[in-house]
Image 1 (tube, rainbow, N blue to C red):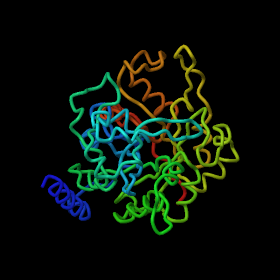
Image 2 (image 1 turned 120 degrees about the vertical axis):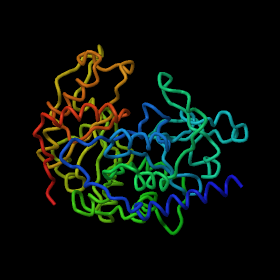
Image 3 (image 1 turned 135 degrees about the horizontal axis):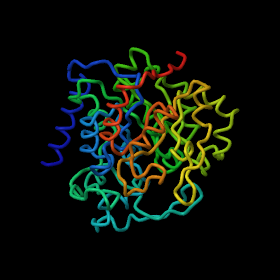
Image 4 (image 1 turned 60 degrees about the vertical axis):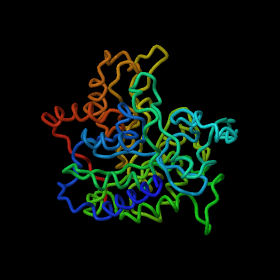
Length: 370
């Protein structure tokens, strides 16, 4: 009975989502740096939970952000890690004890309970937990892993007067395509894209249609973005992490941020999503080093820059130069470096900063050529 009611409720929610609730909404703002709620309001609730996404919308997020991965039976869910160990109660489920496996991930053996070894029904029996011990633990064991479609429905039925965008990552596509057996010759990327198109997320950046249903598709894997380039007009963001090698193309960080590669990828993507440290590196004493030229290089090619990840918690050790004031960090990235959006665990704190910023700033978003 409980399972039946869940799916009936989900159906009703998706029907509402398809109609966009027929609620009047103001135009989506594009003149201010985007407030991108990293896995929802993950500083308050377990990451990628329904409550985290709803709270982020209440707090003023322009986009709710999700990592999209897949289950054993080919269903798409919102979940960051390949393994369930850190943010679910899987260890409290003896019926799944035999599921622990060791797989090679980016050349390293990883042992744990992999989501790709569980069906959607099995994953729905688990409950999310807060990743960081210094954050609120009171919601542990109460919230389910949402599906991709449940996530989309949250954005579409939002009570917020402005439209809310979705910012979705194709998570670890090389690994997922190796372990999940798709039907009819499809790939993870195809299933992912079909769901977006089902809800009419398929418009070119900053067009009237995109402003009606804003979306960014993000990935650390260049080949996935290139694959999708000819299949959707939706804007794409290349994620970048220092001291890393791409899983698919085996490119180094230095190769990815080179002038030649940025020239090439700027024909595929509308922006980059670098780690903060790729822009404002930090030394071993937690002091800021001179900023890099990555923002300037990206802007010179018409690319937006959306760095990750910001938060308002002093005990997550901001670089000492900010004097334990997270608003100083926001201000350096937004006012001094002129990034175009930020991924934040605390969308309310960025919205608080942005309310003051918009009073004094005359910046406008440099539109990418349409």
